[in-house]
Length: 461
Image (tube, rainbow, N blue to C red):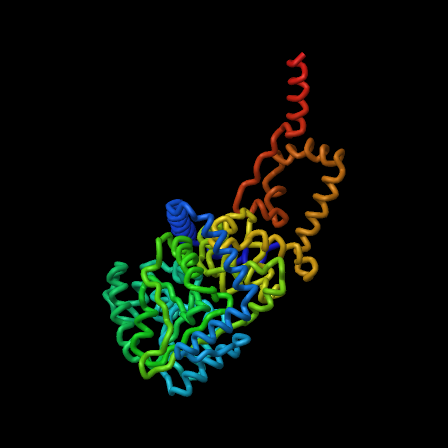
């Protein structure tokens, strides 16, 4: 009954020290989020407001996006529309090709990851450099992000030190984070100065002003856009917010939920092209409008990509980002993958214990676990339900609908305790892989209840 996720998770867990570190580090971020949220008395009010704003925005996309286009155009930006990943990549390439760009610097963008922008451009002779430190490390390692906010969370500083020795000529054996950060800064500086164009994603797009808002802790997005005269921004159309008042609600929630900070170090607004330059903005659909047609899953579009659901998820923390087959891991990735292509990404549904912690911490109240449960109910209709689980569920249903048989099974259960290990731990027992089976109590709850009920009646006489 193993899935792609469980097999990949098993591989991740072979390095027990790394797995423990991954779990503890992300739980520390979750704890910081809890501390920050408790310092804001109106926290739950903000979450409710953010959810309402998102539901409003996503049900009024047409008018808000057109308002954004009108205001962005008035600001001097050039607005493009892309229906899918292919159009998005083609638009970026067309802009760069028209300006004869060969050196291109970009800040972190999950939309670019989603659409495969980097390999698309590199195949066409454009040198793409990631300016975010975590993304740059992964780019040099030829790896994908394993977290949407902390992309290189799975990489230890010793590995970074060895990478920088090879790529940047740093001191051998020096893994000091401050030293490595300075080395990366020095290495990136000439790349910033020689870039012919720069690109950012967007955390939010403000309809009433035409602003693109980018929230970062490193300032590399700002560095990248400060030198080249040609700048590009791209956002998935669900990033639209009505006005600056609405933006204030989200910025109060974003950093607290993501990293346990009151606010990101930089919250940058991009509105106009640089003097003598061009500013292009690409609004991307790529399946988002399809999610609007799924009433049970429409709240997926509420997501502000804070990563809080990953930091709290007991499965993600203990299995790592690469155990998921969709490029975004964790609870939100499970839902987005299913919304995008259920037949391709259905196996990720097993990576959830339905503990509901993700739904509890989501700052915009995406009903993540509830949606995963609903997706699971669709598996049989997709022809993807696990045969073994179906047989087990059918057997349990048969047993529980027959009280006499159920009670007989309870009575016989303690016999399992005395069976030899080879009969209890084998290929038919997934529970016993990696854990010990619990001992069955000699007395069932039913028997205990009946005995205590009789005893209580006798004592009351």
